[in-house]
Image (cartoon, rainbow, N blue to C red; front, top):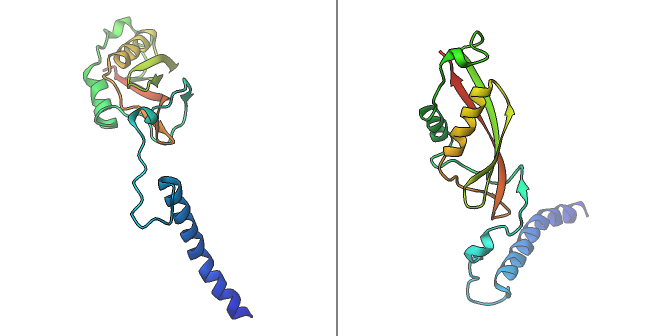
Length: 161
């Protein structure tokens, strides 16, 4: 009896995989028992964009600056216009400042709803927003395979020396 049970236990995972594969083929092609291979499930381009106006704070595929994070940090560094240290409130403080910016990456890659969530200095806060607004369009985020609006946070670091 014990031997028969272990035999069934070994077959059960294979059976589950077979049934899942068969149901996936059936949902994609409509018929699981046809002789011809099932077509690849594809959706027209308009079905790949989420039609709601929801903004996601966490998505399966994060929005991305063209070229990735390294290119984004390089863009921020190259486009900074640092004010004279005398104009900064924190001019006698640390040699660097970080402003954290939160924004929405829209379905078309444009940026909206830009806000500071960690302030450092009013002048640097304004400069961080200017840099984010000047960025090129991003690659939008995806949720369940569809392009969605997503929130994203970026730290903008200023070297004050």
